[in-house]
Length: 169
Image (cartoon, rainbow, N blue to C red; front, side, top):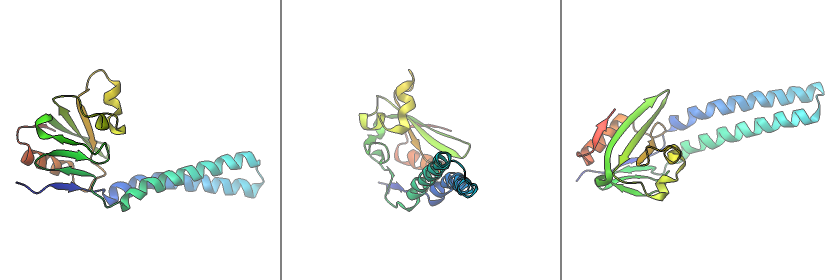
């Protein structure tokens, strides 16, 4: 029996996406300060200051995940469990295939199940598109670009734990 693969947040996978909101928040902040210094209307300065605060809060929220060292995803001989999306074990015998998709800096594993996923997974934000579209009702999406293991390594682990699952890239 193989050792489970436990995945955590990647520091770089959380810090780099937070840089953009921090920069935009700083730009709004500078704009608010310039507005105050030039005697601009208080209402406009307040709106700009609120935008700065919102962007900085978004950046802090994204960056906060870099310091969360808890296990997010577990792959083992029983199945897979994504604690970010329902924390429900999906046994390998219910998985028909898995596909690694990547592009523009993001990577995702798409698991095709033999039946609809449990409600806790189905209603997770990552699977919103599957609820809307008429096809893909048995697809579970797992975002992997923010985790500390590459998607290819996860595919290798899936092949080791569940050799019957068809893998496409």
